[in-house]
Image (tube, rainbow, N blue to C red; front, top):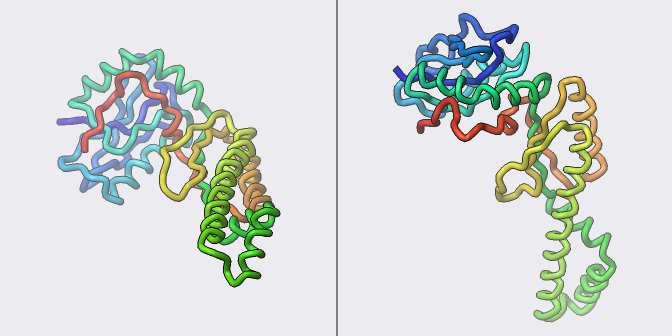
Length: 249
């Protein structure tokens, strides 16, 4: 039977899951595979695994239980190896890499921060900060809306100003938050977000980090800031050339 991998930890980890259910219907028992001073947290892999809410939550729960007492390198949902031997083989092959990552992530959690512009608020901000835009808008209004060329010029200038503001605000958010983070990882570009960054934060500094997020929200009301966490540090595992399990969809 194939082996489903939740994460990797040190053999000395104080809170490895016991008698815990994982993915599958009914939930398959979570167990531990040992290799040297490392372990893999696994279960049997259910057939026809799909990213359903129940199994996504089960995967997250196993990692949360394990991560409560020490560092765990989380695997993405759907990480499946051919069998137990394949998992322990990669643990042995990549032992030095995994030990280094466990040391780097010990006592740390991940927070993901996404930010976007409130369109009405950022337009107001752009107009108030740019005398030339205000003058052109006022001129257009006084002339009954302005000519087609005037309207086009105003639209282009506003679009350019908003784009410039997006770059500035993205840099400001990252600069504010990275001061209380141990590391950061930029997420994939997605429509609508000017910031999509994950921050690695020491557990002892989480309150300070959260306070900075609130400060950013207050100082930049034209921004909509979304915070997700604390999370297992998925974005900071930095896998070696071969994962301990190969994702199967």
